[in-house]
Image (tube, rainbow, N blue to C red):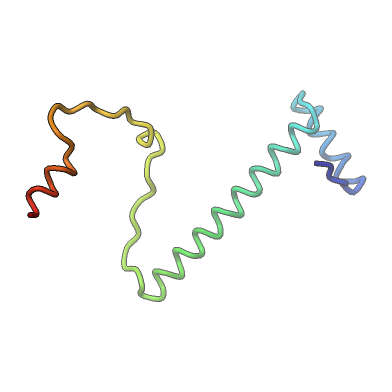
Length: 90
């Protein structure tokens, strides 16, 4: 992808890249990614505030800890729990 920048913005980007001793493309990519993430976070926050103020939601759950998402599965002896639940419902 090619992005055309105004000369003043390009100069500021190159100055920052030189200060950080980084490639200008990398600095631009980092800045753009951070801005997009802030924008997305702002939208989520506005949506949550709207839910609370409208009364549709009384309380929001705290965000999940991403480090718990990749937990290893545990092998359990016996038949699957889903089969046990189906049998007990009959």
